[in-house]
Length: 169
Image (cartoon, rainbow, N blue to C red; front, top):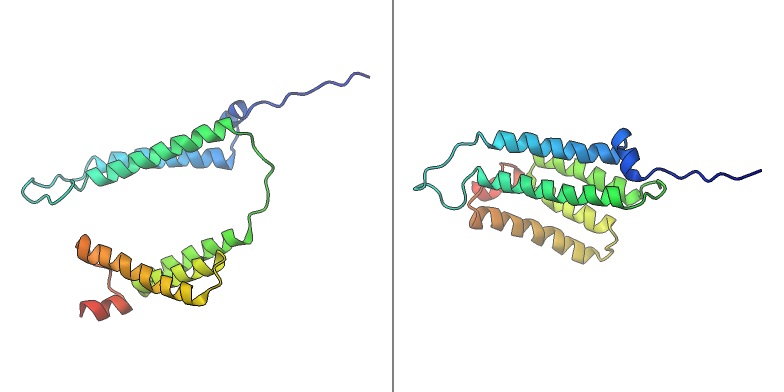
């Protein structure tokens, strides 16, 4: 009996006609970039006398172009690299996603500064740093540097919250 070798189709052929989650994510990012870039075309222009830096419409456009460029690199890698078998995601992935949800909840309902402290502590600990003194110092210094960057350098206020109201009042 003759054995017949079946050649698997390349990823290029199968990805265009299948609903692969990775392929759908790449398409979603492109659609998102097109929609947000189109909506940024309607931003008002600031008169030159009031402009302190770049125009408000310029930054989102540049960021969207950067996201689309990085997505094109991912698209190239998606079509050129061979797929490996799907493995279960590591536990740290789910911890990080949980930490992001905690960050959004705390920053929205309690305080953004406190959320930065909690998130930087949790991520440092979960990703393997066991020196508690180092983690505590990082989780205090990092949010302070972010606060100084936004408050002093950029002139932007943090949203009101428990700790930020102590500074602003």
